[in-house]
Length: 317
Image (cartoon, rainbow, N blue to C red):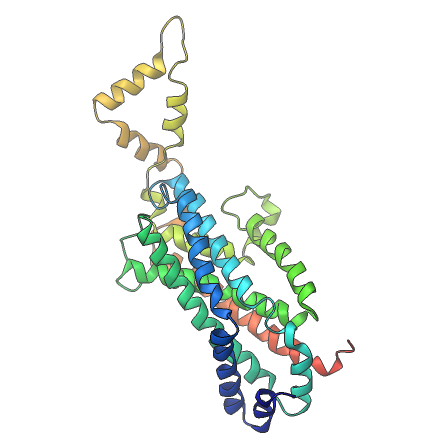
């Protein structure tokens, strides 16, 4: 048994044990290269910016696609942070639990550490979006600063995904099993987010269990999705500009007339007015609701992680 393990079990109080494990986690961050998750977050954010940054927060279609991608980035960051952190030292936890380790102290230490990590990743994501010239929301809803509102949403999505991965890591008995489960969880988040793929009516309640839904909804609300222009109809008409009817090109004539009379923006806004979504209203209540659901699921995942590890002594592995 290492000195670090002995120190962790010498103290019987929950708070001292939590401090010891927290120190261990931050030392691992520095000396065992756990810091690599931070540049990885920057790289992934840069790829998303490159792929969808031109239309993100500018048009309805671009915002829907971009917020979906951004929510997926946050979920991936959270999953990768903690999917192996518990199961890789399960034997140590079992031994220390029998020596007096409080599971709640162990999990709380991980929760605090992962929260700090998620805060940093969320800030890095926003910095990358800013420096890659993505147009960020500029109308605040909650804190008085739109950038802070955006950071809070990205943090809550990342942290919620992180705690889901921590739960999975606590439930599984090997890193192999945990890494096998992770892709299925990610696919579930993508498919059942409810904002990007059309789902049957019976599947709608399932969307409430996904992190992606509440992340997308909050981001779209903060971007004032319902006031953005919709470009799909205009772009489709432009593709049809050479269609001839009785020797005429009516679509091309209409496009020229609209451009000449500065009607394009009016048409885009009018098109958008027929495709608004009440759940994406620019309303503090919408954002608070999303944050509430994310916090609720975060607490559920933490509770399940604690309860599952309380039975670690029965592990017959």
